[in-house]
Length: 309
Ligand code: IDC
Image (tube, rainbow, N blue to C red; front, side, top):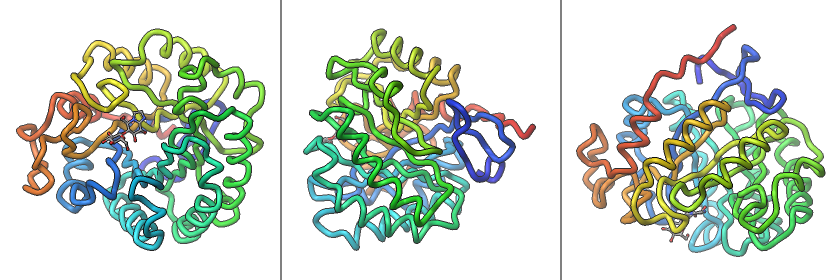
């Protein structure tokens, strides 16, 4: 972050303060309501220093025991984690983790309240990226676009220069998981500047068809893989090493940023640490990593070589 500074969207890329396209690589939290003990000085030091991550995505569920149950607590916790990320030179992605119900309009008022609070509080920081709806599903693109055009101005009024990421139809599949494709976005983009669109995949479930669509869409839309898994779409099962590497190679080639689900010790294939690691507090090294954690650590920790001219 020290090198890259304030980010902005340039064409279909994310650019740094030197006006050069960059790719950010990092990890997503699991739900803060369940895995809050995984995010502390020790775990974030390891993420920044050993994994050499650029990005920390803060997944704040809205339902399932999340934000709606205690807005002040979740707002405060997100802000604390933004500060912890900043101290370590990490970009912080504030994820309004809607999932069920899939219609983002269900949470429109909550989104406006939440984003007004976090955007005003973090306006002067350079490390914050806003993700306004994790995975819309069961609703058309028009509804998602309308939601975005109501939430984005609330953020902009408080934090005018931050990058904002908009979820896409079909669990942020650019529509593919609901039988559509990226043309609905390309032909009818959100009426706002400095924004990107989210694409999510789970490598064991989403393969060539999805990779082809990302490659095609990336020529027209600024994309950010704000969440992906090495396993199947349930977040569990075995790591698909071949598909994961094919995906990450493609993202590297296109300079598309990514965050992996999850930097946690969840007892599911997508968790990076073995169950019990967060209570033990021993995040360092590789002995407590799962197969997924090992793969991601080795992919993320390679040099960034961020351009300065
Ligand atoms: C999963 C979690 C699991 C939890 C479930 C429901 O791994 O522990 O019970 O959510 O909250 C997504 C979602 C993400 C899912 C993940 C795996 O963004 O919340 O996490 N997934 O199913 N989209 C596709 C997959």
